[in-house]
Image (cartoon, rainbow over all chains, first blue to last red; front, side, top):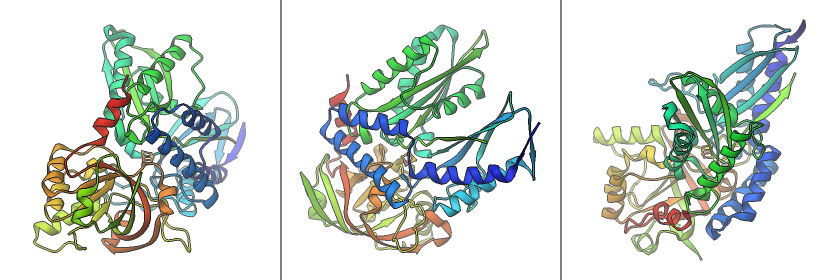
Length: 280
Length: 182
Ligand code: SF4
C-alpha cells in the first residue's frame, strides 16, 4: 500500500493545465514541421507558417496558444495499491483545474447547467475518467478540449456487415462535415468496438497518443495510414482554405464488441491538440 | 497580395474585396459571440437600441482569454461562426458590414451578405496568440456579466484575415477545397 496525498494531485493538475495551454508537446510540433514541408497550397503554407509563429509567441509571451483553453478532460490511471489521503480525489482534481485556469490566465468556458448556462467562473468541473490498474502509482493525463472541434465529433452505430469500408467512410464523412469549423489541420481520434460509450471514450483517449506514433496492431496501423491519406485528399486544407494538410494524425483504438454491432466514434480535435501526462 | 483596409468598413472597400484576398484590418471592431448575440436579438425584439452603432461595423466572433497585467487582451482567435447564423441576417439588414470568424455559414447568411453587400472574413482558427498581437486596446462596452462573452470594443492594427465570402456571395471554403481534392 502506498499513500498519496490528494494535495499532490491538485498541484500536478494545476501545473499541467497551465503548461499544456502554453506549449504543445514535441510530437505535435514534429508533425507540424512535417506539414509545413509537404503542404502544396501557397495559402495553406502561409497559414501553417502563422500557426508555427503562433506557437512561438504563445510559449515566449506566456499567452494561451488558443483562446479556447477548453474543458479540462482528466484521465487518471490509479494503481490499485494506492491509498488516497487528505480529502476527496475528485475535489482535488477540480481544485487543480480551478487554480490552473485562474493562475494561468486561461479562459473560463464551463457553464453549470447545459440549459440554464451560467458560467461557473473557474472552468470547473472537469471531465474525469478513472481506471484502476495494477501497481502503486498514479498516472495523470490532462487534455483540455476546445469545442470548435468537439462539436463536430460523431458516434456511428454501424452494422457488422458495414465492415472496415463502413468505418473508413464514417470517419471521412465526419471530417468532411467538420471542415473549416474544426480548425484544421486536425488530429482525428477514432474508437472502434466496445459499446456506445466505450467507443466514444476510446476516441477521446486516442487523441492523447503522441501524433505520428501508430497502433501496435498491424491492421489498425494500416487503417490509420489509409485514413490519413484519404482525409488529406479531401482538399479541406489548413484553416479549411484548401490544401493537402487536413489532418496531422489519425489515432485509432479498438476493443472487443458485441456480435450484433460495430460502434465507431470519431473525436475531432484541432491542431491545438493538447495532452500532457505525469506519474505520481 | 495584401490589402490594407480601415474598419468600420466603407461601402467602397466592402465592394472591392474578393473571396481569397488576404487583408489587414486597422481601426475599430466589436466582439460578440453566442450569448451577446442572443442579448442583442432580445434588445431588438423589445425595440431597444444595440450597444454600438451597427452601421458599417465589423463584428469579431471571439471570446478572449484573460489579459495579463499590462496587456490589452489575452489570446484572441476566432470562434465558429455558424453558431451565430440564426442572429446574423437581422444584423446585416440593419447595416452590419462585416464579420470575422471561422467556418461555413448558412444559406440564409449568404443571401443576407449578398443582399447587403457585406463581407465575411476568416481569421485563422487556433492562432489566438498571434492574432492578439494586432489588438492594441480592448474595452468592455456591454454585457459585462457575460465574462469572456461580453461585447468588447477593440482597436486593431493590421489584423490578418482572409476574405472568405464576398459581397457577390463567392465562398472560398467551397472553391478552395475543390482545387486540392483528389
Ligand atoms: S477548435 Fe481548437 S484551435 Fe479552434 S478555436 Fe477551438 S480550441 Fe482553438
